[in-house]
Image (cartoon, rainbow, N blue to C red; front, side, top):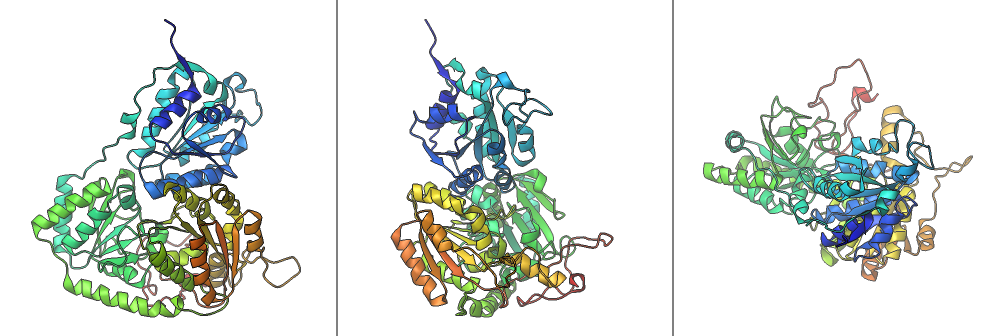
Length: 604
């Protein structure tokens, strides 16, 4: 009896369908035609991006919204098309975003001949070598009969342990090669049992907690990836410990909760940063302490005055930035559940004096920033726009996915975008400009077409605005709010402070003094979006409400300014004197109560 045969592409497409895959994001190129054609015979929707990097970021937003299988799939093709995924793939890798990239490369028949777009000079079609430092795994299928096994192992690798992107390159001829149609059950490759903490380490952590007078929890995106929201809140309430988040961990704890300290770091809340500076024990869960999160490693005095209990699913992150007293390799949820049970058994309770102090600091913070939140200046202030957008979301669509970009948005997203749900996201490590727009589109797809918001500067929008074409094509209610100040404001702020002048920040037409920028309303309308221009503070809120009610892809261009005092709660220097010794820890003069940027010698 003759065996039934199937192409490698059709086999992978069928397995993806069986695994519940909803979308494949990608761009057509001659190297992935076989895979794209096979997808046409499935229920999987192929979502075309305007550039390969946007396809990865669509998948990024999809994953951040769902944080579980089925995985988002990306397909790209040969040479420049495959290379276009480098920056967003690095973002996914360093920010623990799971996806599978199925990349088309040339036919094996032509390997090492230097055919069109082949990476040939150091080895036959050697492109996957570029991907290895920025992915969990990157490899190429070299035999048709191994293709299905390699695909399934790639899928499993992406979502297990610390989530991350995996790249699987499939040569054009292998995509079309026939294999036996006896495909395995893919479900075992979709399962993962996360590690639990060592019980002895849990006991040691609780002993430290019981002795502490000023303990706090600091958590990052690991809470989101393990769905540890309830476990986090239960631990905080059981032990009476306040909780701060990094910008990527934002919304892990309801920000209205009395034990919430909001975000910490360069633009964190004043009470959150006060806790960092004065705590005697930090229990860090699912975070790696980047410079943004720690004010250039100046907020915490670890290990001198503050002890650290560090929990992470990735052992390599434990103790990387700060010396640990207790290091626990564990899934965030399982660790918090174990810590909660142990804290309850040990009779750990909250430190009233400490909690009262932080509550007073929170009141002081709200009073200090109220003028920014209610500012009526024109052009508008970032804080007022964030406040009004947050108010509308809380009232009209609290579950709306909100993405705040890098640049000057990083100075306001953490402390001024109020989280009405767990769906508030930030690209907090690679900080790729413009990421918010395609990521918001991916989240809208993940939420079955629910509204999504991208908050981004004009520099970021200029780089990535064509992503809105996908929102138009898919009829998605995605709103991009563009802060139009015609400069790279966060870079300008630092350069002027340190050097007394800016370079390559302000946009101007040659020979003219006035700042210049494109008409974002016309750009939006040219792509099929609704375009709105806002020049007065009172006009933003009704315009945002109307955009949300319309259900149409919308770009709101907001005139913002660069001259009034901005918000920065932890100003710190970049080391620029090579001969000067550096070590983490507080810098005299930086522990201020207010948000005016202090001056210190290394800035002069």
